[in-house]
Image (cartoon, rainbow, N blue to C red):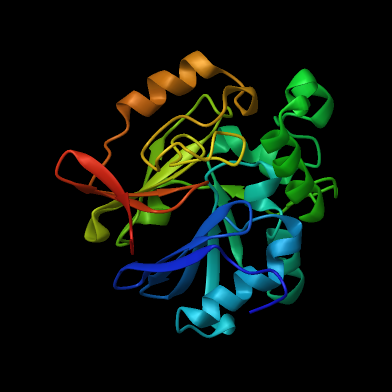
Length: 248
């Protein structure tokens, strides 16, 4: 691994590896024609993302595409570095999310907009980690394109609308793994939330979200199977009526 280390790397099912990164998460997904990522962390995570592809047992030359949940820098920041080395990689997102993914302007809260919440020590600690992850670096993915239904024919992945966090937020269902990748539409925990909160499906801190009412409506409509692979916090699975981190 690089000098940046993941918090956890979990094999969720054959061909599905979940990475809880230093600040945000991604998934390495084996497909019939190669390897896909779902999201790619912050700009400083590029090398770590590629390391986790190798850790999952794949050759980097087999990387074919990145499916994007939403265009915030902690989810697309690693993509430009990947494309510099592997320009053949496709970047796919919902049509309503392309402006956020292509950047550099995007539907994302700024430190100034967080305002008085910076007085909370846990928010300051999160912000420091984000800055160290190159959160302030302008990030643009101009080659990103809108996915269509044809992109998922014959694949073990299906997009689901998860709007509200951003205009085109998307979750991805992985039926063979009985799992859903939710980005920030549903998380299990976030660094700005109290550390005493047990990991379970929950909403991200509201100031990160463009339209909280719509995000709540979208989250309630998502089919949540037994395994949740969130954009922040550990992967969790349902055990009876409770949720537990996978591997714990």
